[in-house]
Amino acid sequence: MSNAEKNRAAPPVVIVIFGAAGDLTKRKLIPALFNLASKQLLPERIAMVGTDRIDMDSESYRDTLSREIGDYVGKGFSREMWDANVKRAYYLKGDFLDADSYVRLKEFLQQVDREQETTGNYLFYLATPPSFFGEIATRLGTVGLAEESGDRWRRIIIEKPFGRDLDSARSLNRVLHESFQEHQIYRIDHYLGKETVQNIMTYRFGNGTIEPIWNHRYIDHVQITVAETLGVEDRAGYYEESGALRDMVANHLMAVLSIIAMEPSNSFDADAIRDEQTKVLKAIQPFGPEQVLTDAVRGQYGEGVLKDGRHLHAYRDEPGVAGDSPVETFAALKLKLDTWRWAGVPFYLRTGKRMSKRCTEVVIQYRHAPNMIFSKSRLKRVDIEPNRLFLRLQPDEGISMEFNAKVPGTGLDISPVRMDFDYDDYFEESTIASGYETLIYDCICGDATLFKRADNIEVCWELLQPILDVWGALPARSFPNYPACSSGPSQADELLARDGRKWLTLGP
Ligand code: BG6
Image (cartoon, rainbow, N blue to C red; front, top):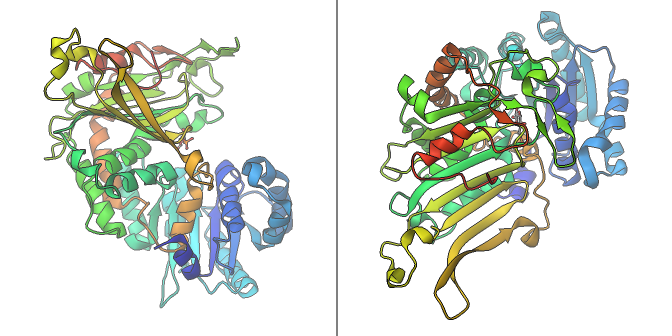
């Protein structure tokens, strides 16, 4: 469905945000709703009800949002547009664990429905700490707020992290399914909302020349890097319980991997696509304890110095972090997929905080040409770089192909050159939207393609569980093992060096 078609079809809705006073709401959700309103992508009959424990009324909530919104929307902000829309925001004080709060919420929503003519369609957005997800869903069910009837729908968006291991993810799925049916549950992974991540599918399946060489016959290996310069910031409470494997690999990196590796689906239907993604994740060879020791690397940042001389704290010196914290801020994995397409093609994944550069990138390294006709000259195969495709997901969005060219001159010198596509050169539409715009919009339209299904989440945890177990049982002795502002621990370089390869982004 095109955006224009979806927009015409977008039904009236009340978006109920649990955790209305939290960081995610002010940094991502309200700006995303504003951006959607600016692009006229919201239905005409729409309202937003924020609920949280803080004592406020709708008037003071609107004032708070109005004061802060300019800081988070950036250059597309229009005060006039904001003022025209803010009256659709309401606030209801409530305790997520208190039964009466849900009775009051139900009455409040009926009142909003009458005022804004929103016809009883509700989208519940759980922007709360994960420990509340199950409780909120159950209590919504108890007061009848999860019930659909006729055309009237009820949907629930669950933020990440979805569980902290296989058991907790399974039990959260069970609890959700007691009140909501699977088609009502939208598990969010904001990476799937990113334009550049979605474009991988268009690139692969919308071009006749790409897919025929997207397999083990032509591809040597794949690298997926999600590097951040940020440290743990003010999220130590969450991060100390999480770490890089849970925070990034279990969701964002696996999401990118599944789009790179999936088979083409027979249609663009949400379930057809998610079937293929789950299938390929299931084909990843499971880790035994031995493989964890050889094919999974963890790291934690120590102190470091920025180019301008500023000193960066070690993770263990960050506020709220234990002085002997065993939590990893870096993870790298080597994965092998048991499929016809990917036999013998390793996938190397890595993510880390406090790296030298912010960079989310997929590199496809192709095999060498089968017969080196230049061998009579002094060039040997090893001197010629293989072709590489760089899918630049952020921040410098685009696609680059690196291939070899003859250096002009009388001799035969060969040098890699790059052919670049940059989003900015072709499209007016900004690609810096956070991903939340697309996802909220799709949920209102009932399109679950970019959301995770229960089985997809559980497959990821199944794969990572042995790593969590081994790392939990054997705390790393070498932490911290990489300086802040670097490319990560040397063990991650060794992971590839053992296979005669090297990481191709971020530099040494
Ligand atoms: C979040 C993680 O899901 O993704 C954060 O919890 C991380 O730790 C963030 O910083 C990265 O997202 P993005 O869109 O900035 O790459």
